[in-house]
Length: 304
Image: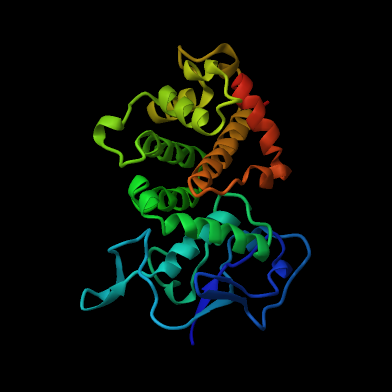
Protein backbone atom coordinates (compact mmCIF):
# COMPACT_ATOMS: atom_id res chain seq x y z
CA UNK A 1 0.00 0.00 0.00
CA UNK A 2 1.51 3.32 -1.11
CA UNK A 3 0.78 6.49 0.84
CA UNK A 4 1.21 10.19 -0.02
CA UNK A 5 0.72 13.21 2.25
CA UNK A 6 -1.68 15.84 0.94
CA UNK A 7 -2.28 19.53 1.68
CA UNK A 8 -5.49 21.56 1.94
CA UNK A 9 -8.21 18.90 1.66
CA UNK A 10 -10.65 21.21 3.39
CA UNK A 11 -14.39 21.59 3.05
CA UNK A 12 -16.64 24.32 4.47
CA UNK A 13 -15.94 23.02 7.96
CA UNK A 14 -12.76 21.02 8.58
CA UNK A 15 -14.67 18.60 10.78
CA UNK A 16 -16.81 17.52 7.81
CA UNK A 17 -13.86 15.45 6.62
CA UNK A 18 -13.79 12.75 9.28
CA UNK A 19 -14.17 9.63 7.13
CA UNK A 20 -12.19 8.35 4.14
CA UNK A 21 -13.66 8.39 0.64
CA UNK A 22 -12.54 6.50 -2.45
CA UNK A 23 -12.31 7.51 -6.11
CA UNK A 24 -10.71 5.42 -8.90
CA UNK A 25 -8.79 3.21 -6.48
CA UNK A 26 -7.45 6.12 -4.43
CA UNK A 27 -8.57 6.39 -0.80
CA UNK A 28 -8.47 9.94 0.57
CA UNK A 29 -8.13 9.97 4.34
CA UNK A 30 -8.15 12.74 6.96
CA UNK A 31 -4.93 13.05 8.90
CA UNK A 32 -5.29 11.13 12.16
CA UNK A 33 -3.73 13.82 14.33
CA UNK A 34 -5.31 16.92 12.81
CA UNK A 35 -7.04 19.30 15.20
CA UNK A 36 -10.23 20.88 13.93
CA UNK A 37 -11.27 24.42 14.72
CA UNK A 38 -15.01 24.57 14.12
CA UNK A 39 -15.14 28.29 14.92
CA UNK A 40 -15.23 30.97 12.26
CA UNK A 41 -12.58 30.74 9.57
CA UNK A 42 -9.84 33.33 9.95
CA UNK A 43 -8.20 35.12 7.04
CA UNK A 44 -4.96 33.24 7.71
CA UNK A 45 -6.77 29.93 7.09
CA UNK A 46 -7.21 31.03 3.47
CA UNK A 47 -3.47 31.61 3.16
CA UNK A 48 -1.72 28.96 5.22
CA UNK A 49 -1.13 25.53 3.71
CA UNK A 50 -2.07 22.62 5.98
CA UNK A 51 -0.96 19.02 5.62
CA UNK A 52 -4.26 17.58 6.78
CA UNK A 53 -4.81 14.43 4.72
CA UNK A 54 -3.19 11.57 2.85
CA UNK A 55 -4.07 9.26 0.02
CA UNK A 56 -3.53 5.51 -0.23
CA UNK A 57 -3.46 3.28 -3.28
CA UNK A 58 -2.30 -0.16 -4.36
CA UNK A 59 -0.38 -1.24 -7.41
CA UNK A 60 0.72 0.72 -10.44
CA UNK A 61 -0.99 4.06 -11.05
CA UNK A 62 -2.67 5.02 -14.32
CA UNK A 63 -1.11 7.91 -16.20
CA UNK A 64 -2.74 11.32 -16.17
CA UNK A 65 -5.38 12.27 -18.72
CA UNK A 66 -5.29 16.04 -18.14
CA UNK A 67 -1.48 16.24 -18.03
CA UNK A 68 -0.95 13.50 -20.62
CA UNK A 69 2.68 13.31 -21.69
CA UNK A 70 3.84 15.57 -18.86
CA UNK A 71 6.59 14.47 -16.52
CA UNK A 72 7.67 15.24 -12.97
CA UNK A 73 11.10 14.78 -11.43
CA UNK A 74 14.41 16.47 -10.81
CA UNK A 75 15.71 15.83 -14.33
CA UNK A 76 14.77 14.08 -17.58
CA UNK A 77 16.78 11.11 -16.36
CA UNK A 78 15.02 10.92 -13.00
CA UNK A 79 11.41 11.64 -13.83
CA UNK A 80 8.13 9.85 -14.39
CA UNK A 81 4.90 10.47 -16.24
CA UNK A 82 2.31 12.41 -14.31
CA UNK A 83 -0.33 10.17 -12.80
CA UNK A 84 -4.13 10.14 -12.65
CA UNK A 85 -3.95 11.15 -8.99
CA UNK A 86 -2.92 14.62 -10.15
CA UNK A 87 -6.13 14.82 -12.19
CA UNK A 88 -8.14 14.05 -9.06
CA UNK A 89 -6.28 16.69 -7.05
CA UNK A 90 -7.07 19.27 -9.73
CA UNK A 91 -10.76 18.30 -9.81
CA UNK A 92 -10.89 18.41 -6.01
CA UNK A 93 -9.34 21.87 -6.02
CA UNK A 94 -12.06 23.13 -8.38
CA UNK A 95 -14.86 21.53 -6.35
CA UNK A 96 -13.75 22.77 -2.92
CA UNK A 97 -12.04 26.12 -3.66
CA UNK A 98 -8.88 24.80 -1.98
CA UNK A 99 -5.59 24.03 -3.67
CA UNK A 100 -5.22 20.30 -3.11
CA UNK A 101 -1.58 19.38 -3.52
CA UNK A 102 1.20 17.00 -2.60
CA UNK A 103 2.94 17.89 0.65
CA UNK A 104 6.18 16.82 -1.03
CA UNK A 105 5.92 19.62 -3.59
CA UNK A 106 5.88 22.53 -1.15
CA UNK A 107 9.31 23.65 -2.31
CA UNK A 108 8.33 23.59 -5.97
CA UNK A 109 8.21 26.94 -7.79
CA UNK A 110 4.77 25.95 -9.13
CA UNK A 111 3.28 25.33 -5.69
CA UNK A 112 0.28 27.67 -5.08
CA UNK A 113 1.00 30.84 -3.11
CA UNK A 114 -2.08 30.45 -0.89
CA UNK A 115 -4.23 27.51 0.16
CA UNK A 116 -7.56 28.97 -1.02
CA UNK A 117 -8.23 29.87 -4.63
CA UNK A 118 -10.91 32.27 -5.92
CA UNK A 119 -13.51 29.66 -6.79
CA UNK A 120 -16.32 28.63 -4.43
CA UNK A 121 -17.35 25.44 -2.65
CA UNK A 122 -19.42 23.17 -4.86
CA UNK A 123 -18.84 19.99 -2.82
CA UNK A 124 -19.90 20.84 0.73
CA UNK A 125 -18.37 17.77 2.36
CA UNK A 126 -16.43 14.61 1.61
CA UNK A 127 -19.55 12.65 0.63
CA UNK A 128 -20.57 15.21 -1.99
CA UNK A 129 -16.99 15.49 -3.19
CA UNK A 130 -16.76 11.75 -3.77
CA UNK A 131 -19.99 11.84 -5.80
CA UNK A 132 -18.87 14.82 -7.89
CA UNK A 133 -15.39 13.43 -8.50
CA UNK A 134 -16.80 10.11 -9.74
CA UNK A 135 -18.99 12.02 -12.22
CA UNK A 136 -15.92 13.92 -13.40
CA UNK A 137 -13.88 10.71 -13.75
CA UNK A 138 -16.52 9.20 -16.04
CA UNK A 139 -15.90 12.12 -18.40
CA UNK A 140 -12.12 12.11 -18.09
CA UNK A 141 -12.05 8.44 -19.07
CA UNK A 142 -14.33 8.96 -22.08
CA UNK A 143 -12.38 9.12 -25.35
CA UNK A 144 -14.99 11.33 -27.07
CA UNK A 145 -14.78 13.83 -24.19
CA UNK A 146 -10.98 13.75 -24.34
CA UNK A 147 -11.07 14.57 -28.03
CA UNK A 148 -13.64 17.34 -27.68
CA UNK A 149 -11.94 19.09 -24.75
CA UNK A 150 -8.31 18.22 -25.49
CA UNK A 151 -8.01 16.06 -22.38
CA UNK A 152 -9.44 18.82 -20.18
CA UNK A 153 -7.08 21.71 -20.84
CA UNK A 154 -9.78 24.14 -19.70
CA UNK A 155 -9.68 22.57 -16.22
CA UNK A 156 -6.01 23.50 -15.89
CA UNK A 157 -6.77 27.02 -17.09
CA UNK A 158 -9.60 27.43 -14.58
CA UNK A 159 -7.48 26.48 -11.58
CA UNK A 160 -4.51 28.55 -12.75
CA UNK A 161 -6.68 31.60 -13.33
CA UNK A 162 -8.49 31.09 -10.01
CA UNK A 163 -5.16 31.57 -8.27
CA UNK A 164 -4.64 35.06 -9.71
CA UNK A 165 -5.03 37.37 -6.73
CA UNK A 166 -5.99 40.58 -8.55
CA UNK A 167 -9.72 40.89 -9.44
CA UNK A 168 -9.26 42.67 -12.76
CA UNK A 169 -6.46 40.44 -14.03
CA UNK A 170 -8.34 37.32 -12.99
CA UNK A 171 -11.44 38.48 -14.86
CA UNK A 172 -9.50 38.97 -18.12
CA UNK A 173 -7.91 35.54 -17.66
CA UNK A 174 -11.29 33.91 -17.02
CA UNK A 175 -12.55 35.40 -20.28
CA UNK A 176 -9.86 33.42 -22.13
CA UNK A 177 -11.55 30.21 -20.92
CA UNK A 178 -14.77 31.29 -22.66
CA UNK A 179 -12.84 32.01 -25.86
CA UNK A 180 -11.31 28.51 -25.65
CA UNK A 181 -14.61 26.79 -24.84
CA UNK A 182 -16.47 28.36 -27.77
CA UNK A 183 -14.87 26.29 -30.59
CA UNK A 184 -14.74 23.16 -28.43
CA UNK A 185 -18.46 23.31 -27.70
CA UNK A 186 -19.24 24.31 -31.27
CA UNK A 187 -17.38 21.33 -32.74
CA UNK A 188 -17.57 18.25 -30.46
CA UNK A 189 -15.61 16.24 -33.02
CA UNK A 190 -12.52 18.35 -32.33
CA UNK A 191 -12.10 22.12 -32.51
CA UNK A 192 -10.22 23.60 -35.45
CA UNK A 193 -9.04 27.18 -36.13
CA UNK A 194 -12.04 27.67 -38.41
CA UNK A 195 -14.34 27.13 -35.40
CA UNK A 196 -12.83 30.04 -33.49
CA UNK A 197 -14.27 33.54 -33.23
CA UNK A 198 -12.95 36.99 -32.30
CA UNK A 199 -16.45 38.22 -31.49
CA UNK A 200 -16.74 38.19 -27.70
CA UNK A 201 -20.45 38.97 -27.77
CA UNK A 202 -21.03 35.95 -30.01
CA UNK A 203 -18.84 33.75 -27.79
CA UNK A 204 -20.56 34.70 -24.54
CA UNK A 205 -24.07 34.37 -25.95
CA UNK A 206 -23.32 31.03 -27.62
CA UNK A 207 -22.11 29.47 -24.35
CA UNK A 208 -24.96 30.91 -22.30
CA UNK A 209 -27.44 29.67 -24.88
CA UNK A 210 -25.76 26.26 -24.92
CA UNK A 211 -26.48 25.69 -21.24
CA UNK A 212 -29.49 27.93 -20.52
CA UNK A 213 -31.40 27.88 -23.81
CA UNK A 214 -34.81 28.41 -22.23
CA UNK A 215 -33.68 31.35 -20.09
CA UNK A 216 -31.22 33.51 -22.01
CA UNK A 217 -32.64 36.62 -23.66
CA UNK A 218 -31.58 37.34 -27.24
CA UNK A 219 -30.59 40.90 -26.23
CA UNK A 220 -27.40 39.46 -24.68
CA UNK A 221 -26.29 38.58 -28.20
CA UNK A 222 -25.85 42.24 -29.08
CA UNK A 223 -24.86 43.74 -25.73
CA UNK A 224 -23.56 42.42 -22.41
CA UNK A 225 -21.52 43.94 -19.63
CA UNK A 226 -18.79 41.30 -19.64
CA UNK A 227 -17.87 42.09 -23.24
CA UNK A 228 -17.69 45.78 -22.30
CA UNK A 229 -15.77 45.14 -19.08
CA UNK A 230 -13.23 42.96 -20.85
CA UNK A 231 -12.50 45.67 -23.43
CA UNK A 232 -12.48 48.39 -20.78
CA UNK A 233 -9.84 46.62 -18.70
CA UNK A 234 -7.81 45.22 -21.59
CA UNK A 235 -7.63 48.46 -23.58
CA UNK A 236 -7.90 51.13 -20.90
CA UNK A 237 -6.80 49.39 -17.73
CA UNK A 238 -8.92 51.58 -15.50
CA UNK A 239 -12.47 51.97 -14.27
CA UNK A 240 -15.26 53.13 -14.30
CA UNK A 241 -16.52 52.05 -17.71
CA UNK A 242 -16.22 54.80 -20.35
CA UNK A 243 -16.54 52.89 -23.63
CA UNK A 244 -18.72 54.78 -26.10
CA UNK A 245 -20.67 51.64 -27.04
CA UNK A 246 -21.50 50.81 -23.40
CA UNK A 247 -25.10 51.16 -22.30
CA UNK A 248 -25.71 54.15 -19.98
CA UNK A 249 -26.34 52.00 -16.89
CA UNK A 250 -22.93 50.35 -17.33
CA UNK A 251 -21.08 53.68 -17.24
CA UNK A 252 -22.82 54.60 -13.98
CA UNK A 253 -21.56 51.58 -12.02
CA UNK A 254 -19.23 52.34 -9.10
CA UNK A 255 -16.34 50.09 -8.03
CA UNK A 256 -18.30 48.10 -5.39
CA UNK A 257 -20.94 47.28 -8.03
CA UNK A 258 -18.35 46.43 -10.68
CA UNK A 259 -16.64 44.18 -8.16
CA UNK A 260 -19.92 42.25 -7.81
CA UNK A 261 -19.95 41.65 -11.56
CA UNK A 262 -16.33 40.49 -11.54
CA UNK A 263 -17.04 38.06 -8.70
CA UNK A 264 -20.18 36.80 -10.42
CA UNK A 265 -18.14 36.10 -13.55
CA UNK A 266 -15.74 33.97 -11.48
CA UNK A 267 -18.72 31.92 -10.27
CA UNK A 268 -20.29 31.76 -13.73
CA UNK A 269 -17.07 30.52 -15.32
CA UNK A 270 -16.67 27.85 -12.64
CA UNK A 271 -20.23 26.62 -13.21
CA UNK A 272 -19.80 26.57 -17.01
CA UNK A 273 -16.56 24.57 -16.77
CA UNK A 274 -18.16 22.08 -14.36
CA UNK A 275 -21.03 21.61 -16.80
CA UNK A 276 -18.51 20.22 -19.30
CA UNK A 277 -17.93 17.47 -16.70
CA UNK A 278 -21.68 16.93 -16.30
CA UNK A 279 -21.60 18.46 -12.80
CA UNK A 280 -24.44 20.87 -12.04
CA UNK A 281 -23.13 23.20 -9.34
CA UNK A 282 -25.61 26.07 -9.60
CA UNK A 283 -27.59 25.20 -6.48
CA UNK A 284 -24.41 24.92 -4.42
CA UNK A 285 -23.89 28.69 -4.50
CA UNK A 286 -27.02 29.62 -2.57
CA UNK A 287 -25.03 31.68 -0.09
CA UNK A 288 -24.15 34.07 -2.94
CA UNK A 289 -27.70 34.03 -4.39
CA UNK A 290 -26.04 32.79 -7.56
CA UNK A 291 -29.16 31.25 -9.09
CA UNK A 292 -31.14 34.43 -8.50
CA UNK A 293 -28.37 36.55 -10.02
CA UNK A 294 -27.96 34.15 -12.93
CA UNK A 295 -31.66 34.24 -13.78
CA UNK A 296 -31.66 38.04 -13.64
CA UNK A 297 -28.54 38.29 -15.79
CA UNK A 298 -29.88 35.90 -18.42
CA UNK A 299 -33.13 37.86 -18.65
CA UNK A 300 -31.92 41.45 -18.26
CA UNK A 301 -28.12 41.52 -18.53
CA UNK A 302 -27.88 42.80 -14.95
CA UNK A 303 -27.34 41.17 -11.57
CA UNK A 304 -28.09 44.18 -9.35
